Length: 421
Image (cartoon, rainbow, N blue to C red):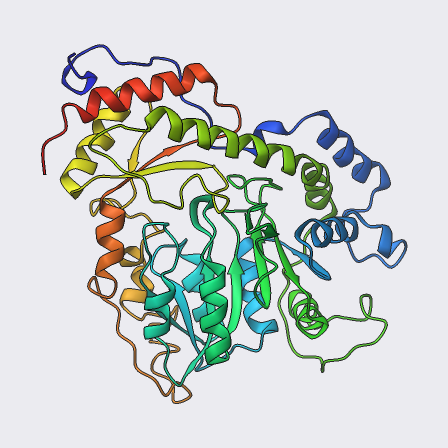
């Protein structure tokens, strides 16, 4: 059968599914919640009257309950959540923070913004940080690790927590891409010292932009509250247990909070649906020669929001990216050297060049940093190899059996014409 890439008829002419999940479910309930805020004429969270009944306070309570932590703090983005978490956990100038080489650039940016130094770690084929490599990169200056649950896949939290405990490291979970996910029956974000979430448009639930910080530590929570609100604290604590210090303005508005309140209730069903879709997708592709899946894919660690398979060579992945897309199902090779994808460490220009906004090299050239770290394309070669052989196809909760039949046909058709390794 002639490939669409070579002028043949494509398997599919209808658009593939949306990359949004919660965003596809915005409806009357969210409309009513937002209108209620407008009717109250209270857009700012911290008006003293009715503080505990604010939309944002309710969102925090619901989030803490959902994740299973004692505290939650709403902020205006996932990046703000990471910065607040780092500061609240006591990480600062001169400290080294381990991060995966495959994550959104904000993970590295948040570390640098507080004067700490990112140390890149390899990933494994689950697309998450490799605990063994992580441990090898610990130095006397390492104070924390940010573990990122990527593409809906949870990290190996048992091994990560064991390494962290052995080396007295703070653990910050970046759950931006796996909101609602779990590991061995426990919600992601509740394992480490702090958990961070994003509510940006492409995440499982959304406010357009927004974030959450969760923790079981009262001290960390109070420090995060102070930092997110310009050193303000008097509206939040019956008893302040940490000294005041200068902060930023990372507050969430009442409109944003109202928009996501109703979505939390929908999240369990959304996740149930995405996981079912992923299992069905793996079933229809089971036995397909020429590609393979990581063992963790489709397991309890997998939220089911994307389909990733591997080829033996980067050239094969490049071919399938083009060929499957031509058949009407958008496919993407995760690492393409010709694209400036900000999920891959080699494209983080500021990090590769140790460049700050003022033309210098803060924090790397400062006397408070006693370590030494270099960044280049060879920093994490295994990560680049894995990602260059990985092909991703987006999934959501609305995929039908007909969609999966098209997927199966497109993959079989193109793999049969794939160049041999």
